[in-house]
Length: 126
Image: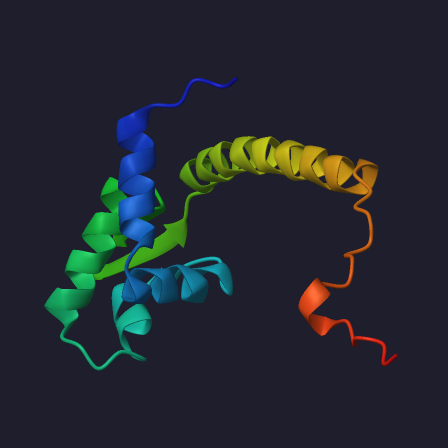
């Protein structure tokens, strides 16, 4: 199994836990890069609030920022998402194996048909 740096994964999943940060990542996935003001435009929150969200994404390594003059451009960084996906895939393989075993067990087991309970049998008249 692959060794993961727990702190890196913790930062990645913590950053992804917020819907605003996920929306910011979705915006960046649709374009190569975007300025902070472009990213902030669709949200009904202050620019400082967006900057805090971008700080969390940057600290997690999910985005990189480059300043040109007064403009700060953001772009996605793939490595942390690839690590998270690899970690998730290891558990997906584990659970797929377990579910395949369960399915095989259920298919092997043949249950006899349920007998009619005595209370539902109609007595014969003599």
